[in-house]
Length: 339
Image 1 (spheres, rainbow, N blue to C red):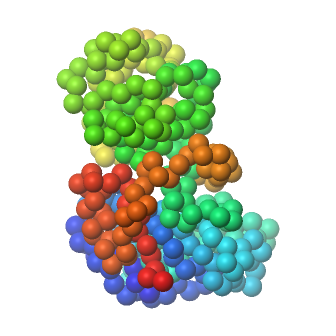
Image 2 (spheres, helix red, strand yellow):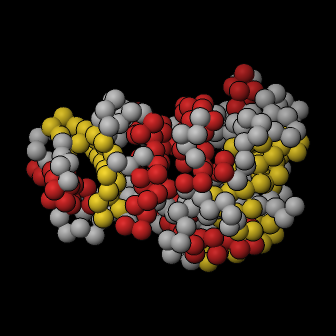
């Protein structure tokens, strides 16, 4: 099969790799579509030390596939099911970072494994069957939405709350969207002016360019202050300090982005009082049903995040990554098979 392989930092090729070997609890899938991640994928391609990945490695953690065969102990997947998060396994010669950018992949029947006392290979519940009629290209957003909804739900957003989100990429927009769906009253987006319209489409009530020299003054000039929650969806050094005076006493701040992972510091004395640094993590399986429900209700809409009219073939994986690197796309969709 073909797969997108990072051979070494800075060099990605699409080449032949061995087909995955299906185990008793696995379902073999034809890859349908995958979405790029401007954080993880670009950092992996650049050799970011956070991930500790050895090369060569297959990229892709936001891929959707269709089941074409099932192992003898599989009970919860059937041939024809469209499923989330197809993966591949590492070999002696080839690593994977989930490995979803490939023509074939696997999902595991976690329920059957747990029933039989067999150790889980991948986190329970990440491989799920999608409702009939769900567009597999648009459904590539589900992984991002599940992760971010779990993260913000563990912090909590009260009805009418005031939320500030730093970042206008796929994760930042997801937090705005979730905050709106959770009933926030004010959602301030801080990000790129070229993406203001999208920020408002997904739920932002207010917008400030990250280029403003004094973000605090700009926010207060719009009558905005005392935020219950501030989320940094980018994770760059110094960014939280720029808005920390806007957190209300007793409010929360959180870092989700990984651009400068392990290097970000904050000056708590910039805050007007005590606050909580929320570091509760996430588990995407716990929000799968809620994400699917929001999609069915039209409250999470893939077209706000993805250009579904311009889908890249797997052979053009480098062009797809260039599109997000150059900010021509929020997330790029890649078709994993030619058929």
